[in-house]
Length: 222
Image (cartoon, rainbow, N blue to C red):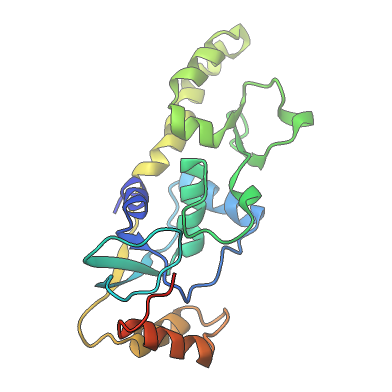
């Protein structure tokens, strides 16, 4: 599924984050590494979702998920949250973390370096591109600015290709594996979650009891 489509599904609530997921924990180095990998079209791994019915499902965020079938992210939250923040210019509704990590990312058209904004290096330098602004406005304004500098004329085609390479990240396809079926109880899904996130924090017994309670439809956690 294209990254742009995944972000639309997050907007509509078709893809959401289960209540038992931890918050956003990535740092700036991890964000830069992800964007660099995508820029060079290196693989960044697949996503794992739990396809289930939204009725009685506990998910993060300010609004309820869409009615009917919903896909809950079991693995890929950090990557998808990063992409949403960089491309949309704001965190997703289920975000819980440091928003500054998702803003101020720039790209140097000459060195192909991703770096967070530093006025001493970047202010007034048209070769440093605001990645979020590029994702939202397209390459047009940047090409116009670069064209006004005769010193960049010989490299302009190269710079345009690099701008296109960045915006093309939205069209990168990510493989999605699904956990689905009536036999996939909350206990099974939590076990899968803990196996996939073996290096992270295990779900506590208290959270497991809450999840089972919510899953029966007797209570809705907001």
